[in-house]
Image (tube, rainbow, N blue to C red; front, side, top):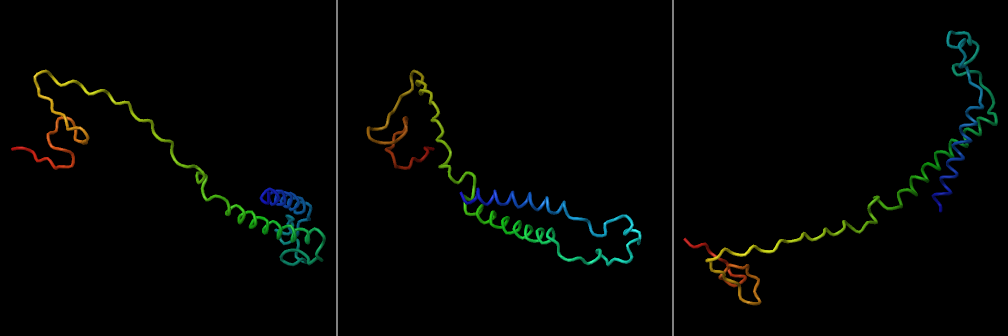
Length: 134
C-alpha cells in the first residue's frame, strides 16, 4: 500500500517538474550570446530574483530525489529474489523400469536369502564385501 502511494507521488512530482522546467525562460541561450552578442550579461545571464518557477523547480527537484530514494528503500524490503517464494523444483516422475529379462536356459540362478538387500545372482549376504575370484 505504501509503495503504491510513493509511486503515485513520484509520478506526479515528475510530471509537475517537467511542466515547470518547460515553462521557464532560457537564460542566455540565444544564438547571439554564443557569438558575443550578450556581452553585457554575466556568464549565465543577468542575475534575476528567484521567481516562482525557479523555487518550484528547486522544491520539485528535492521531492524527486527524496521520493526516488524512498522507493529504493521500500523496494529493498521485499523478497530478495523473484523465486524466493517458490518451494523448489517439482519432483521428477519416476522412470518406468523394464522387467528383468529371463536368464537363458541352462544357467543356474541364485537368489539372495529373504530379508537381505543383496542383488540377484550374488552368493554373499548383503553388507559383506565380495572379492573377485581369480
